[in-house]
Amino acid sequence: MRRRRGGAWFPPATIALLLALLPAAREACAQTVIVLNNTSGMDFGSFAAGTGGTIVLNAANGARSKTGTVILLPSPAATQAGFDVSKSKNGTVNKTVSISLPVNNTVQLSSGANRMFVNNFIASPASILSVPNSGTPLAVGATLVVGAGQPPGNYSGTFSITVNYN
Image (cartoon, rainbow, N blue to C red; front, side, top):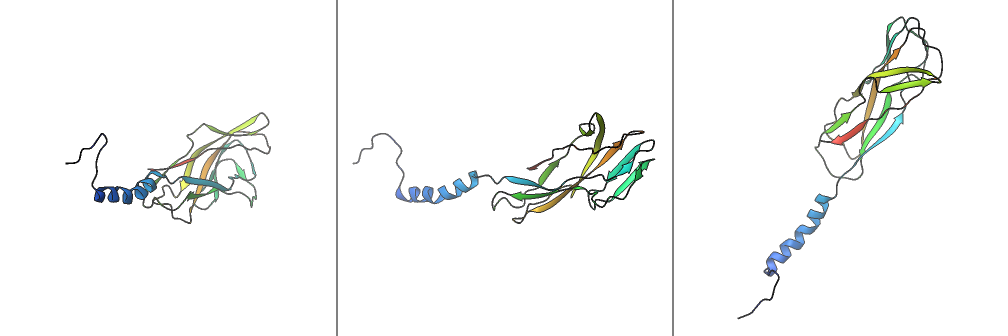
């Protein structure tokens, strides 16, 4: 009769099975990270304020529209923001991605002491069902709130978006 001193004893077949499972367990622990790269900035273009209103950038096609007495001036560079959503490595397929955009009255454009809010951010597509290995485009539009007699200037600012696996 054999005596064992301390420790657990596994038959050889169990050890082989455990060793075979180790690479799969290590791969399951390695997380795929979503990578978000900005490919183009949001640009509301040139305009005259009039007595105020809004400029809306369509997320899907970058087209501008307005409300109120804002006058849209020719602006070939006016466009929605563009991003590329990709994965850090192959894996994690068929997982939806949530997109979090800024809430109203948190993002401002400024030119010196002058400010305008950017509200109603919208993404196109509104959700991503799965990130392919080659990545996928994401566009973001928004609404610029223009005050009555808003002073002219070169307004700029930043905003943050977050993408996460659900």
